[in-house]
Length: 314
Image (cartoon, rainbow, N blue to C red; front, side, top):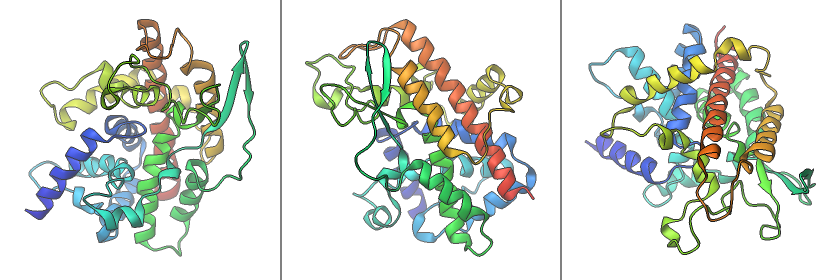
């Protein structure tokens, strides 16, 4: 019963407090990654997640029931990719939040400005600390280290699954500097799409628009569960952007290059196609943004799947 109440609380948290790709976007990247993985890699990844520290609550997502073992393992793998957002909850799970949450790990914003169509990168005046790219390199190294405990590897794996998705959301790689955002627009969080007179609690910003883009285009019908909702979407994405097309673009282990690609998309695509302050995107923008997002989700899945094969598939 305690486990049930915990999972209900998590579901409510995810539905109202999603960050980066929302839970749908993250689960799609890991659904695609799982399909790329060898049986050996899947087995080792599952065992690690089940061995996660008890206070992380990671293993509670493995739900007993009559479904196939493969379905339950895939579900755990997908939910693990959202764990780094789940642990943001510092109201109901303060100890877990204090131990595991790190807000600055979710992004690496390249500061930039545009004048007369020319994009200029702005050097940062402060030294970079921990961030998405730095952490991806660190977790990659940790997962390969035979001297590290399964506890440490489980947490590293969950973060890797999340940040590998985050870095493919273009606005997790961008801080656009303008006259009203001298330190950058925080990945579009300061770029408001709602009309100026919209109450604060109902305003939408550009970052959230991209985070939630799958659901905006393919809404869940009658609160469909993941097993009814996600596979068809993932299969359509893979059909449109097949793995064979990206075999030479995986850049395994080159996390800084993954971030640079995201920045290129942010600076050259995200703020184009008629996007304006205080206006929801037009149809041209919506269509282009959806195509970019689908491709990025596919690419993230292929890259993470092959990375985990290299780490655990032997």
